Image (cartoon, rainbow, N blue to C red; front, side, top):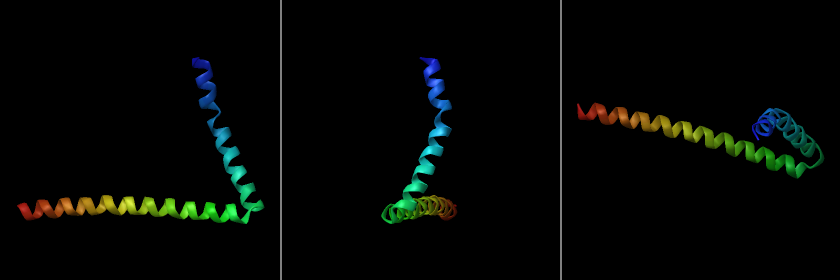
Length: 70
């Protein structure tokens, strides 16, 4: 059982390459897929940026609260 799990973990990089290359092929063959993938990537980037901004705003709010309470 442990050996099987190790083999699965060791095969992850290979499968990541297969997924990436498969998506690139699909982008070339299907403009609709390429457009959907581009939109997904943009949304993911925006979500990351919003999350970062949210964290920074929380820090600023915390700092202001501390400053006002002193």
